[in-house]
Structures are given as C-alpha cells and as structure tokens.
Amino acid sequence: MEAYIKGIGIVSPQNTFDTPDFLTELVEHNSKTLRCIEPSYKEFLNPILSRRMARIIKMSIAASSVCFKDAKIDMPDAIMTGTALGCLEDTEKFLVAIIENDEQFLTPTSFIQSTHNTVSAQIALQLKCMNYNFTYVHKGFSFESAVLDGLMTLAEGDAKNVLVGGHDEISEKYYRVCDRIGYWKKEEQVLTMDLINMESDGSIAGEGASFFVFSNEKTENCYAVLCGIKTIYKPESNAEIETKINELLHTKGLTTNDIDLVVYGINGDARFDKTYNNLKEGIFKNSTATYFKHLCGEYQTSASFALWMAANIIKRQTVPNAVLIGENKSKVIKNVLIYNTFLNTDHSVFLLSQC
Image (cartoon, rainbow, N blue to C red):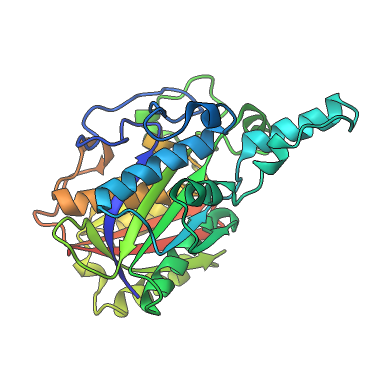
C-alpha cells in the first residue's frame, strides 16, 4: 500500500501555515509548553460560528482548507483523522461546569463539541461532504491508524483523494495533570533549541493540526510517496525494533543502507531517547539524522508534524539546519524514514520515497 502526498496544510508552534518558508525563520519558545501560532480565521470561517468553536476545531479547519488548496481539489472522497485527546478544552469546560453548577442548568454546547470526532465532522460540514468519515482515538497510534485507513481505502480503489489528519491541543489543566506523573521537564526554564542535549527526565508539551491529501494519482506537484507504515507496541528489545524496520523496508526492496535520512522523535527525555540513539548509532549510522520535537513539542499525534517535515525535505531536497543532527551525509534524498515513539510504548515507522 502506498500513496502520493498531494497536498499539505499545517498549524503548529512554528511559522508553517500557508507559507513557502520551510523552517528558516524559527520561533524559539523557550518554554515547557509550545502553543500553536494561529492564523486569522476570517478567510476560513464565519465569524459568528467561529466564536463558538474550540481552538483545535478552528486550527484544523484552517489547516485542511490550505491542504485542499495545495492539492488543487475541492472535495475529498473520504476523511480520516486521528486524535488522542479530541477537543480537550471543551471537555474540560463541560466537566468544570458540572462541578460549579452542581450538575444543574448545563449548556450543551461544550459537551457536543467535546467529542473526538467533532473536528472531522466540522470539516465535512464546511465542505458539505457526505463521504466516508472516520476518527481514530488510539493514544500514540491515533494518527498512524488514520494514515493506515487512508492507504487501505486508496488500495481498495474506493477513493482517489482522501484527507488524512492528526490533531491535538494542550490545555493548562491537562499540562498540570501530566506534570504530576512525570511527562514534562522539571527545570524552571527550558531552551527548546537545546532540547536534544538535555539529560533529564521529561519533555516539553506541544500541540498541532496537520492535514494531508493522499492520492493514488501522481501529479507534478506531489511532495513524496508514502510507501508504508508500521506500528510496534511495547517492543521488548532493540533487536525487535530493528527487525520490524527491516520488515517494512523489505516490502519495498530496500535495506537500511538505502535510507538517506531519518527523522527521529527525540524529545529530550533521557528515559526514552536512548531508543533513537541506538538506531542513530547503529543500523542508520550512515544516514543523515534529523529530529523535530524541539519545534512542535511532545504530543500523541506529533508524527503528523514529522510527516510534514519529511515530505518537504524530499520535495525541496534541502535539510534545515535547525533539525539536523551532525552533518548532512546525503547529497540526494530519495528515501526517508520516520521513527517516533510516545512514552516508549507506541512506536511507529513511516517510509517515504521521492516521486
């Protein structure tokens, strides 16, 4: 199963929204919470409707709209999204209202918009799209499940262009809860661009909304070919991880020596980054190494940011200095592999190639 990446739209903590710039003007948050740089929504949403929408819904509608424009299509044949937390801020609003109002006189708006499939539903409503629409809520595999559904739908011939997205937001309450269980750095100040060199536990919180049009038709504007995806749940050893990676490469007649560049999900957490380092110093020691979570933060669908970055690297044939680890060993970038994990439990591998 494979698909051409025909269009991309993304809202992130960097200047990535509807711009030809590719990580040259970086935003250094220097914070333990990286929030998205939101665009003006007037072009994408009715102001009256916009007032009642959660941030993540507005970000996703804007990102998907840019994605359609980039792909030069008006209507997808299917919509698949992945999210671990859904519309988290609306969920919190409703739960707080239950407590403060003693479970009485509750307004339903926050509850209606708190469901995980609200984003894909709102995108469909904006487009008047009556086609297949599905949302996956699989923790660290949420975006990966949506991608897999998109690839299978194209492979079965049921669609020509599908919209696939990953979205999650951070909130103050969610940050505090996760901080208590050791998700985030304990230092008072974190220099995000130096995250890779930190040797303490925890990472930095992030968020984002990334959307892609996958197609079974190649056009001159395609970014790359998504050749395959594999998920690994709680691998028992580095040997198992390497075996799974080789299995994915073997399906395309490739070996680790054919991988020109690897995008690692290094997040500065000393407990888990050793998994990436083992790959970087082992089977991919001859490949160019890059990372991305110092730009977008850690969240359960952050692999969608990595896919955006990898697709752009292939299309532009350039590696931004901000994501490079060591030297650039590849003059031509044909094959790129993304390796990401959330809390060392949900591991995912993406394989992309030049069109």
